[in-house]
Structures are given as C-alpha cells and as structure tokens.
Length: 263
Image (tube, rainbow, N blue to C red; front, side, top):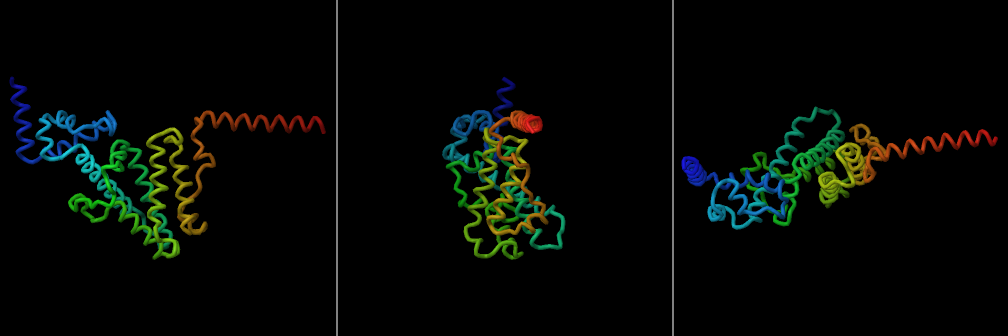
C-alpha cells in the first residue's frame, strides 16, 4: 500500500508540474534501444514512467509525435556538440586551412554522435522527422541546427577560397549524404567496423573535399589524408585480411626463390 501511494504521488507530481512530457522523452531512448524503433510504443513509454496511456496522449497524439520530438532533441544535441567542436579548434593563420579543418570537424562529430548513440541516431532520421521542420528555438541556444552549421561551413570554404563558388550550389546534399552514409554503415555494421572508422572517415572526407574542388596541397596542409588502403574493405574480418596479406607475401617470396633456382 505504501509503495502504491508513493507511485501515485510521483505520477501526480510529474503531471502537475508539467514534467510528464520530458519524462516520456527521457524514457524513450532506452525503450528504442531495447526494442527497436518499430517495437516502440507510446503506451510502453507511459508504463515506463508510471502513468496511464491517457495521460501520455495528452502530451503526444501518437508514437510518431513522440519520436519526432525525440528526433528534434537529438538534432539539437548534435548541433550543440558541433558548436563546441568548432569553438575548441586551435587558431590558424591560414583561412582556407581553418575552413577545411572546421568542415572536417563537423563530419567527425556527426560520425561520433551516431556511433555513440545508435538508437537516437536511427530515430533522428526516421520517416516521422522532416529535416526541414524547424526545431524549437529553446533547443538551439546558438540558433543553428546541423543543416545550418553545414551550410555555414560550406559558405566558409567559398569565402576562404578553398572551393569555387560554382561548386557550392547543392553541396550540402552531397556532403550530408557522404557523411551520413558512412555513419549509417558504422551503426548498422557488416561492411565497416569500429576499427575501420578513422581510416574510412579520412578517405571519405578526402574524396568529398577533392570532389568539391579542394586542392591536394590544401588537403595535406589541413591533415586530410587517405587513411589505410584497406579502410573500406571491412566486409572481411581484420584477421582474415591480415592472413590474406601474409599469404600473399609468402607466395611472393616462394615465387622469387623458385625463379632464382630456375635461373
């Protein structure tokens, strides 16, 4: 009886103070991580925070509405980390080098965010969330969402002379597609593993920036190198790739000895 009274008091406090909406949002990521996006329901979120489904529906009309709010929270969190990463960049006397480094920094934060919180990442880009929908201003204290940050970074590349203005049009679609594709491969697994991340990221960023017109010399100055040659061949286990290379070296050595004997 005492436990029931405590739970009833807690439910009343949550709803009375207007915290139920945030409580549902706080419970959702763990439920999505455990059951997947498709297995998530508003009813289950209500049970997780100890309220009735009717109470939950007063704040969200359906599961898609809650997932959309959760996605906006995730996008806002990603924007905050991007802003922090840019603010922490060391100064550079070369505007073009700094612009390239800032662009790469945004991509790195994007990939790290996805790998660190795959469940939230999947929610952020589900059919219930249109990236064109405005995010509530209170979630973006600095006023920029991830798309705006990307657009500003691309504009910065143009201003610094790193890329031509003619290549700027629509570049955000190309850039987002490349980095999001890599992040998705890492999150879903199969083709890439965590061990391949750094090399694959370097290769993707170098190819992307080169495609936009950044010179090889500028890429080198900014430290954007291609990464290990096999960075994108992770469909085979790392041990298998190592074994294949060892076998190839042995075969080469054997061939050389045979050729020496024949000579």
